[in-house]
Image (tube, rainbow, N blue to C red):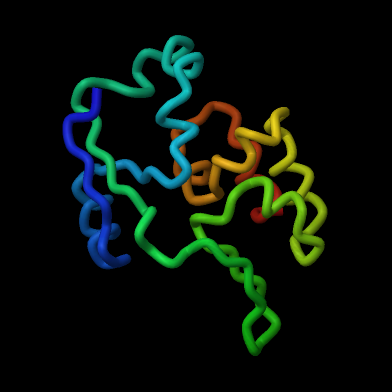
Length: 127
């Protein structure tokens, strides 16, 4: 059960709420995955407080003037998997979700901070 749900107006509000223990919700697949909750009952408890990124302009993949690749938190895993500017290892990791429908909903912003035992998106950028 969701105890509190906030739609963030800006990144400062997101940071503030995360410092108070709120969990990010971006595409919603991690939160709404009933099988995941059944497998790990501690994943989603009655005290869960969420902050949504849906109103923030974070759905773009860009390259800045210095040549740095920037991936917004609301970029879907499908967009990540399809974009040839993304390093191959990260595109492959984004494709580990077996269904295109879920990849279209799931976002990098929801997957990176998710308390998962199998974080397939995190190792490629670290490597």
